[in-house]
Length: 100
Image (cartoon, rainbow, N blue to C red; front, side, top):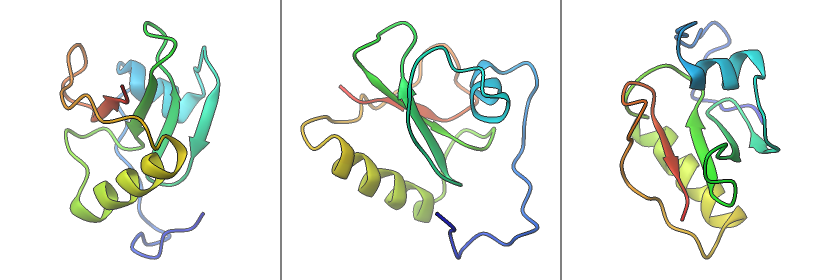
């Protein structure tokens, strides 16, 4: 899915020491990928296997408002009975959230 608000020259930030960056950029996924586009990757959490994990495809603390709208839209379509947990615990500098 191509997002018109991203230019073709946009390069997301990546931290080689970040496990979420490795998941997004290096495909170090130990569970099933549910959805992936230019903004986010949705997989199942390795620790809480029944919880979908939404990860921003950029190493930063928050998605911008347009990204967050897209994230909410996709998550509501894929998981209509789940809600965002609302906080990051162990990896605070790369935005992600669990759907519970």
